[in-house]
Length: 201
Image (cartoon, rainbow, N blue to C red; front, top):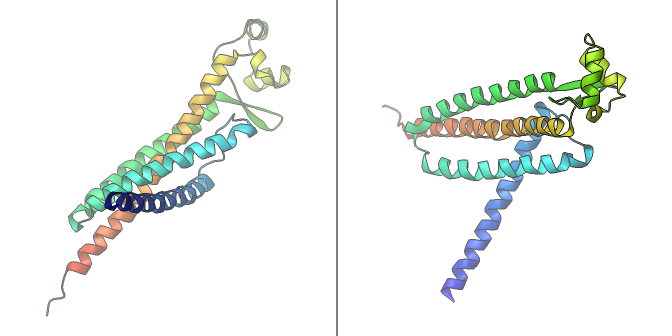
């Protein structure tokens, strides 16, 4: 009986912990998604929820790992280390964000007001059309094919770039999540240092 009671307590605690992590993931995902970008470029409307749920799952796992680290390294002497982690991840997160922007500009074109992902390898038809019109721009090329990019570039090359854009986009979420928590933990450790100091009489 004691073993069963311990298991039930552990399950209850696990449910509470994962509920907190899930709520935190939803909140942080909403905050980051609000100021970063909508779902990755080129994702079909039917697939948007899949990428959203993947981002929330990644954030929940990251929250769990960081909460574990925060409980272990919560002394005043750890404040500067948390500040360093926050600054490092902020720099890496911004670099990943701008990389995503760079890839978006390089790997997308505009058709009918929407961004469409372009490929890296031409189809035979696309190759011959480009050779016949060497001065044609990317947007003119897409327009001439009525936005049917799979007729210009191979579907495999389009899918490869679409997945790369999505992966770069998703990498921003955990980086900024850890950065936010590191800032909070640095403030917490710094506050603990002040409260432990007794006023000099």
